[in-house]
Image (cartoon, rainbow, N blue to C red):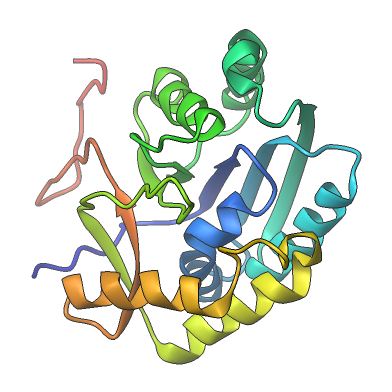
Length: 223
């Protein structure tokens, strides 16, 4: 299996419908990326949970999951579970974000996620960030949103353990959920590891990837 290393990672954009989505879907990747690129700029936006305990948890969690990064987090107060009827507002805030953020890589909900809030955000991202590498993270839920993926990030066992520990440490409001436990998080990581010949891994969906053998020049991304 061919391994591709990004040419540069100076700015990362994290997008989530709910507080904890980003850390659950890409917490291991964030730990690895932020440690590999000290001082990387990380912009994050979560559409729901603003002004609540959930926002406090998210701020604490993302600070822990982005060690050494220059983190900027915005948590909005759109209604949880109602993003499909707040489509226009969600689109507007993404467009406002795009006006001043030009990321090298974006982490956002995976296309095909059946949760209505995740689905709306996944559909909106490529309409606003049209020329960016977007990694769609997966969320293990009762709806069974486990689909075929095409990008894997192997995780060493200590990194996976750190991810699970941080999830339980920072998201106390979610500990009574029947899917929020070490077995669930470790199980999906082990399954994805099998698929990429690693012990553990996080997996992502990519719909479009530009591959080159030398730096591109004079190429208009709109062409």
